[in-house]
Image 1: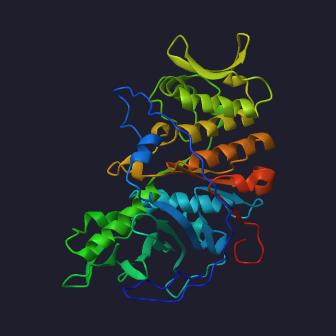
Image 2 (image 1 turned 90 degrees about the vertical axis):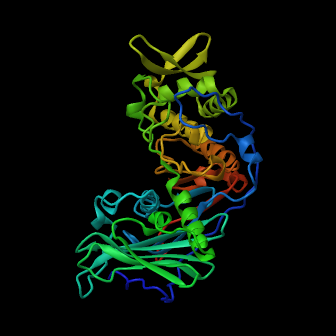
Image 3 (image 1 turned 45 degrees about the horizontal axis):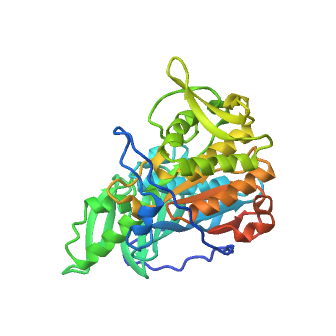
Length: 438
């Protein structure tokens, strides 16, 4: 496959159709959770659900579709994204590829350079891609972000060979191209950008770096003097806010068993410091901690009366389960599935205020929604644990402050007979069917 023609201002070429997927029904529920007490050294607090309800009624920016036009093993694939999205399919169907594309867009939206986002860019180029006359090969991805200004679409073309660089980027809103970039001189490391202004000059042009997402850099270049520039800024900021609020969660049971030092109380991606976070959350919010204990108890084979952490001599924190009758079980004795289930429940119930990620600090928390990416959500979990976790996720996303995209082998096993009742659920079956998504 050849890197697509450069995107030039004003160009309008037809796009190939993409396979679509259906979504399950949605129903709503909500749990009232008070704002946790804060230590003076803690970061700024996140909005609690009652704060969110009091915030102005406007949609939070959120990714609603992913496009993998040509990326790794997927072609012409459109992925709908809801508050709770399960990507199902057998090994090799592209579940992890979709999550990888989302994570890459999120990193680019945070202003990270291409080299850091794609340490092995050749793996993102489809195997069937053929170089063009200039020996160029690459990939294409994109997304749609809905929010206060309505749906905004971002399309991105990345050249991998002979050099890693962005060769085309387009931001569109209601059929209008707000921003477009093109590589006009391969010998120079920049792209020519053109953005809509609707002033005396309908389009403003400038040269920007070819190793970063122009949409993320645009607020630093556009002053917002005209109504057109304000529209461009609003669209770009909506995309950036939605993309950068991402927490990739991959609990590692082997690292969760040992006691850990007392630290910030913010959960790392691998959940290594689970004990430290439990020490904080148990004292800060009794309601959320009670929900966590209930979720663990419902999925456990043995009694669970509490989940807590204690500081040991030497300053290390150890997490334990209270089995009742004075019996305590250290986390070191739990199985991999029990530990992963506990960690994922904690992520869903605590939300952005306790997770280690980089939010958009300039945007009020009530206007942001954190997306959790959980590859192999069903790993090491039995059916009861998995279904309980999905049900809990449905309740969590109904509040609007958190979203979840997880991969599973079999959606039927994850949902059971009551799958249609899970709030905010979208199921995407990536099983190869000859429709171009294998």
